[in-house]
Length: 116
Image 1 (cartoon, rainbow, N blue to C red):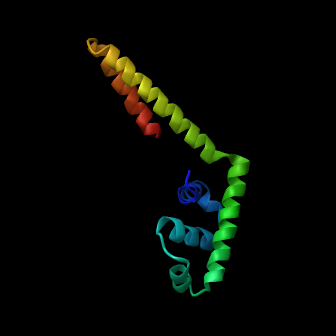
Image 2 (cartoon, one colour):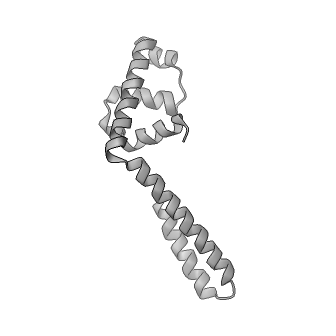
Image 3 (spheres, rainbow, N blue to C red):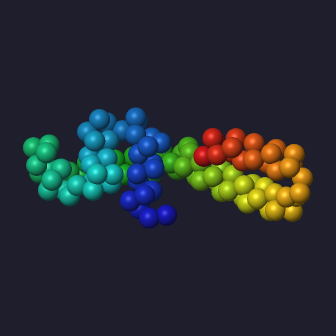
């Protein structure tokens, strides 16, 4: 996974554990695509201070993920849901003549989509 996406996801999962400033700066940098200079100007701090905040925030997110593995679990669950959905579609194709089966499969797919 690309680092920008990874940090963004980790921020969504663990953002409340970061300091308010770390969360704000990481969100600006990774989600709002602001440069170090823009963030520094918006917060009246130096570019180096912004970089330090980002590094400390990233390290904290990685430490949390190493300990809790929530992102890993979420990604595994999404993969499982995707596999189940694919298999349901295959069953649907095989049983197109049986409308009751297709209706039941559609109901299961809707429930799976709510988990995503």
